[in-house]
Amino acid sequence: MSISLGCCGSLLPGLATPISRPLANGVELVQLDQAEAPLVCLDFWCRAGSAFERADESGIAHFLEHMVFKGSDGLAAGEFDRRIEALGGSSNAATGFDDVHYHVLIPPEGASEALDLLLDLVLRPRLEAGSFAMERQVVLEELAQSEDQPEEVALQRLLALACPDHPYGQPILGRREALLAHDPAAMAAFHGRLYGGRRCVLALTGAVGDGALMERAAAGPLGSLAAAEGARHPAELNVVTGRHRLAVPRLEAARLLMLWWLPPASDLEGMAGADLATTVLAEGRRSRLVERLREQLQIVESIDLDLHAMEGGSFALLEAVCDPEDLTAVGQAIEEVWGELHREPLGEQEWLRARRLVANGYRFSLESAGGVASLIGSNHLWGRSQPLDHPLQLLDGWSPVRLQRQLLPLLDPARACLLEAVPA
Image (cartoon, rainbow, N blue to C red):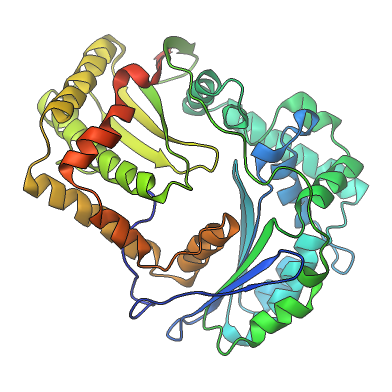
């Protein structure tokens, strides 16, 4: 997976710039009209991911995401979904380490009603005791399913080893004993503490027209939110290096997992370099690691290197699937490939290939109103209101020599937290 970098997509002719409107309480509204889009995307973002949970709140951010859809003071359980579907739309939500967002895709003629419904649901959840108890069982079942997946067990163990004193090392789904202890009052306190001014952004994209939708949002409950309390950024991440081994029941093939610290998402230039570096190493059959380990040596079934842009500190996560007896050879081959890149700069064709892949990934991410809303909503939530062409300028600032000197040292195998996961 790569973070989004590049230029604007087919729904964004020219270099479109979002329109931003901060409200007096610190809530920000951001809009980008895409006249050719067949729908509108309403995307509400909040700095209320699992990284902001207190010690006794494990899993409550994700649990709250579930409970939001159980109704509000003005909406009965299930009514939101029924009315959005009746308008021809769809809705969803996602909780991450840093933030949570709720979005609706809706035909333009239903956008005003859908906006009222979304803000009522998210900002005024009912948190009724009966629904709370029922939804707790759904969340516990989701946790049990995660714990029953061998690959997920190995990944969560790696995160715990690499980030032992940071929320990124804890499961977003939470700990079972904490989930059993949560009650509606504790969840209401979490919501009241974090879902407020200076922590929320509403992104409007698609066929939003002349700004009437933004005016409606400003006049609604968003404008009356109280200022939120607490830290506005996750704690700084430090990755603990080391080598570990874990026997996992029912794991079908061995896995070599490696995690490196990278600059936080706020370091836009560093993220551009990280995207280029991970693309060179493991994006496509012609990338260094894929070509060497899978195509030439044939000692892995697959090898992936994902870049996770995080606010407290990002990380690169490598996963190589292989036979247990090949784990040592896989690790050695990774060190050899890194050493070659560290000693000799990339050739022109390899460099152009990486730049093209990164830029195209950005274009593809902006081919829908939902993709655009996600990008500008997340960016503005964290104070990054740069023009959409800014990532291209950042790419232009990187060269093979600069990548070799400044970024590749961060991906030194000796700096990684490494876990060999083997079938039990």
